[in-house]
Image (cartoon, rainbow, N blue to C red; front, side, top):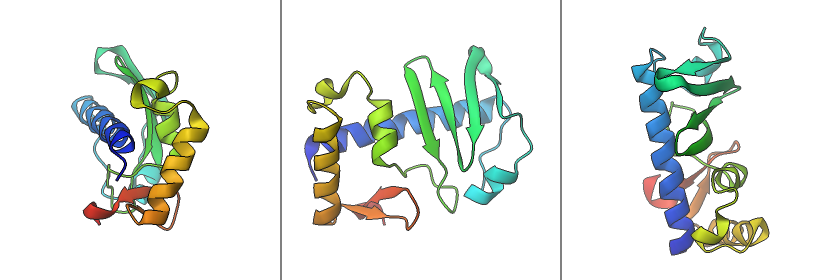
Length: 134
């Protein structure tokens, strides 16, 4: 696994975990599945503790953490560790060079190389997971 991509994925996953923990502290339960999230009766937009904004969408949520925004989908069984190229690029927007990628095309090339190498495994939908976690 490319070390630069691995660091970006770790940082993204840590932000997702922080967002979900904040959601839980704010009274939004962690769903048991992606479908449970879809049917959860909460406002589509709102504020979490500390005035942190969120936007519920489809299988996921965008949360505007103080450290920066993170957009994620819950996995089929409610997993938090899934990601895709679009979400990683959005998470690192404006900071790709600090992760060692000149631009989004460089990130995409690296991401696709890791898929080809078997380091990233597709969920069968839009999310990918680290192969060692599956």
